[in-house]
Length: 283
Image (cartoon, rainbow, N blue to C red):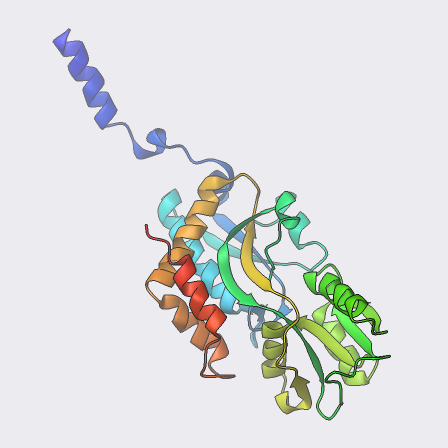
């Protein structure tokens, strides 16, 4: 009897780690394929966009690269990154249809979207604002103006509710992409482009002549950004959350922030400082 107990005890202590906790869901898929597919929008600076060499860069991309590095440790093998461009209209279906593993960009976390995907901890906080060509008098004078906004975004809903509440007649023009909206603004086809203020700042910074544009300081919505992953994949989401929390606890998130926003302003918004405190969850 003692011999049998000794054998059972030995087997329990020397069982391989993979047998002790088998990989499931997205982690299992990544281990089998040897790659993680990062979805990104290529014209949402400074959160995610195509750099001068055509490769994806940005604030959210930097966070996702660190998540990919941690996943390598978890699956115990090399993991290549495959970047997959997505648009506003197909970014969530790309996750649910298993075309990408994680969405890294400027995505607002909402309860209705949580019916389709799961979200990580918050990665940024901003609000919607307006951009116009410099010299255009738009502040508090939107009556009859054409306002461009990218379809299938939370800004569309916020805009409609705002102008309905204040009884101002505006022409809201739905655009397919941010790039098309900027082009329309330059050509005078729309008077104003509305999007998350951080995206507008990034777009202005990315232009050869950023002084061409004027961005209103006011925001009219609350936009909490997060990374999107497949629903009910707790193990994969936990790795992402652990990486994000560590970035906040260690203050490494400030290095990423300054890298992408330092050129615009040396002062960080109070909301971002509060975000760091809230999301610095202990291990």
